[in-house]
Length: 379
Ligand SMILES: Nc1ncnc2c1ncn2[C@@H]1O[C@H](COP(=O)(O)OP(=O)(O)OP(=O)(O)O)[C@@H](O)[C@H]1O
Ligand SMILES: [Mg+2]
Figure 1: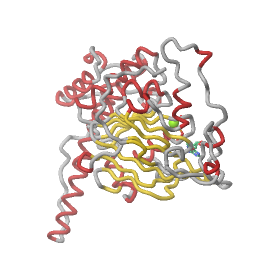
Figure 2 (figure 1 turned 135 degrees about the horizontal axis):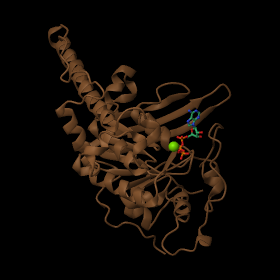
Figure 3 (figure 1 turned 90 degrees about the vertical axis):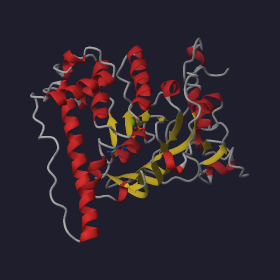
Figure 4 (figure 1 turned 90 degrees about the horizontal axis):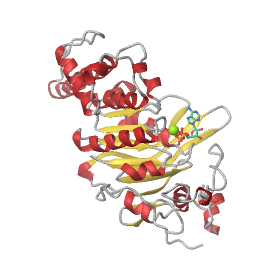
């Protein structure tokens, strides 16, 4: 039976974006967590492009590397035990992996922002919601000045061999509790953008005075206040009830064009991905195993792992007893591996699968898969 999913999603996105609307390009990225005893390979030669104004979902079982991918993009993996073994992450053609932390920081929040799973751990309990959003705005303005200062300085040094003068900060340093009219208006605007109706009241409340759904909207508001071109949301709705989850997901989808951003939505829930994403990336054990337009993936998944994931989703009246969990578990990523990492769980495994690792190839237009069933290679 064909799976039901939201057919209102855009069908125009493509896994391989054209160069001009490309926002982020990850090439050959491997990341290991190092310890005295072993190195755990959390990302294994990942290749990925993200275009502008897209909602891309990254799905896969626990431990497959979704958060590691998110943290590497936002630049929060720059210290041990995580180590970039090889590859690069380019944002608007700037190689982020080659930057020093002080330069990398300028992209965080302002260009690439992230919202985390549990808003209470990210919101400061002792400051009012409005103050926290205002601080995000103030940080954005300071970074903007900082970066233009760097660019100006670079140009002047190159052109005139002199240093640029210090530029005055446009915003006076932000003080909590005393928002200027200008700042307060912008905070209200951002709160309204995330569909908080009583923004005038919410601005003066503390996080513990809000419901879970409202806190998650405030987190999205804080991220949006920095006007990022890419918003990474790592399991943003798992702590919410089903109705609130649907509202927050719908909101994220609407914001894509409204605020001109792309969203990388990380979820272990394929049903969530089907509701909002343009494109879905399926990860397994540190690999991208399938990368496809959402419609194609749900109509006809190619990788046996994606097929397995799909048969675990309860759809419509499907009898729960008929759901088929994938037998076995993700392999130990700290051990060296030969062959396809999914082979031991795969009902279609062939001889070649235990010998060589399949490459991600375009099996259909805009549909990449890493599996020997589609690579055209024989046993
Ligand atoms: N700080 C760390 N130190 C050592 N190993 C880590 C660390 N963070 C993650 N790992 C390991 O890296 C692998 C990938 O983890 P990651 O958190 O990226 O997975 P995930 O797909 O986000 O899982 P989940 O769905 O449970 O959040 C796992 O084997 C995990 O145990
Ligand atoms: Mg995670």
